Length: 210
Image (cartoon, rainbow, N blue to C red; front, side):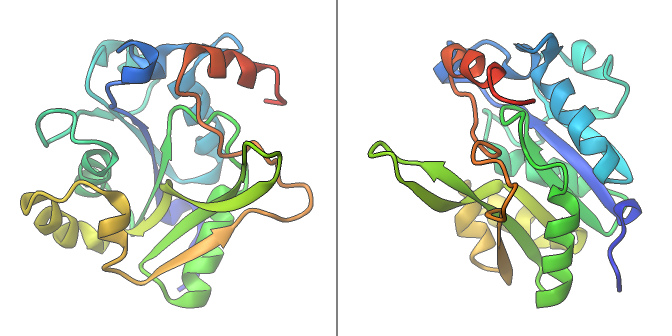
């Protein structure tokens, strides 16, 4: 079956503690005048048929973005997998695409390229791989596990994994057929998957092309 945008629900992950930003609500920090999570939502919406946000604080602020907002079902800020879980529980399409709120320059063709790879490989999960600058100036390709296209029927598997105490994305995805999709074509931005963990990094990202 050919995967279309309408088959995909996009989920912005904004439910973390943001400890490296001093515990402030990262998704509501300004990026070029727009809250980070809203910026991610606006970048994601044209690529998918439906959208929602995973957030655990300031829910009214997130609800003002005009899309459904769902807090974690797991206690104690259980990390991105808690967001994956609530997304799969609420997803009414065959596929769920997750993106974090703190990588504002993610590709505008993320959904289509992940979907093509998922179809081609008959996989259950398609995960982005992006360039990551190293301290010595070189660049290495690295898996970006919070940028995942998931089959919605993986819900039962993830419920089981988290109930058994699992919290690491790669430990769960390793149990399913996963295709890694490199974003290293000519024209792909090297900073596409860079995430802002501190306010200084966020301000540095604002200087990049939005």
